[in-house]
Image (cartoon, rainbow, N blue to C red; front, side, top):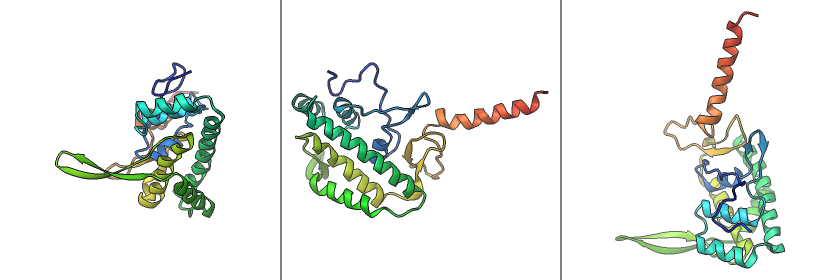
Length: 209
């Protein structure tokens, strides 16, 4: 069994380029080598992703894995998380185009937040006292808490015009650039593809037939 916090040799690296947790969550089914690839195939992978996202510490992830790893409850929760992610993906795509949020999504979101709430506590940093959000992961379903909270923040707080899907692949991101002109998920990868294609087209025109 793969321990939480460790990556399988064969498991793709998680992708965190969305600048917002809900978008990073939606991005857990990316295109890799031209194929849609599931980054959350099982409960161990889900715990590993939560560790990489700094939503669980090593002790919390290990406790969940030890108590629930391999259980039917963990499998059902992982499947429910993936199904919810796909419903969310469809809503985000429509929302990015300017459509209103579906009532069914809002009702589901409010229901999930009621069942899996985030908590608040005060933390001390130097001479300052800060309020921070936290959740207590006791059962697999508790993993919904930070996800649904981040989705609510996405729809309520972010500028929709800066939430975009990469035109070359399936990844979404929140554009935090000063000018708001980011177009691609990764300039080194997707941003270079149009340039390479345009260069090849120019070369074909210059090459005698």
